[in-house]
View 1 (tube, helix red, strand yellow):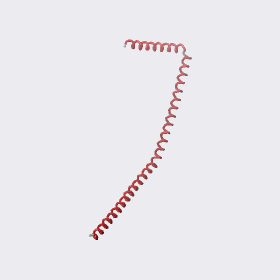
View 2: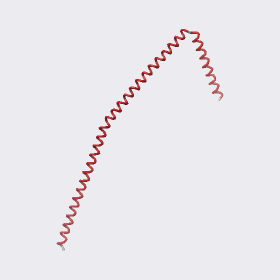
View 3: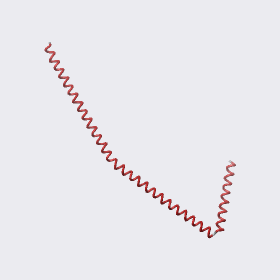
Length: 128
């Protein structure tokens, strides 16, 4: 009996060794597949980064250019408004110089109208 037990034990040991080898091989294969997948993912991330950087730079440049154009337009509009206000002032001063009596009558009438409006607004608040 002992002679039959040794070959069976030997076969069991051989089967266990084979199973261990197969398991180790499967683990190595799984690690290799996982490493390859990770490497591909890393390559894709690097590629995306390389493509995104120029796009971000371009968008940044466009935003800066738009901000500069807006600032220039604002300065231009401000200068135009100052110029128009100066012309209106010059025209008003010229009119007062040319027609002082008429200008005083217009100013007095405008003041009277404004006072009447303020008086009406004050009464409507007290009535309410």
